[in-house]
Length: 231
Image: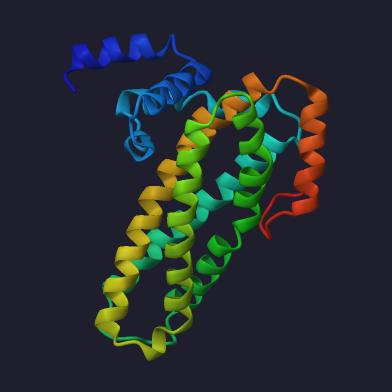
């Protein structure tokens, strides 16, 4: 993007809040645009939003539904960094070696990525329905779609990690590389959109503290991840 156009885009986007963006996405979907076409944000918008997350998080009490989800995202992003480094190391190997720490680490990472399911369930069963009741249905639809895609790839990584010694190493590396790159790219983008668009929108449109208290009780009933920070 040319510098002048990029600067103009940044100036414009600075006037658009998360709820406005969600409403615009909803109108595009209502007009016939496929939800999957909304999956990637322009780089200018992503840069503009990047400084807002810390402010939002600092303004929420520990244990708040959104605060917990963001903290879990921080942990998941750490697992993605480890997956990236571990996959890179394995791709440089010429043969399987069960004594290498990367294979044990891969199992650990895969277990925690699959173990994020309570996080997604709290979003899908508690947060998303509240947004949809308030007319915000497009973004939750996209997030659900990505959850489904990611579940399959995370399970694939887990199975590969558990059966590394039994699979032809060239095939193992190829499958691991494909699944890892998909998860890393898609989940980082997914987390960014939730942190900077979906969650701020939820805080704007769900403006009743009693509703948030009820949501917290539902989340408690669903449960949390093994890596969820203490609430």
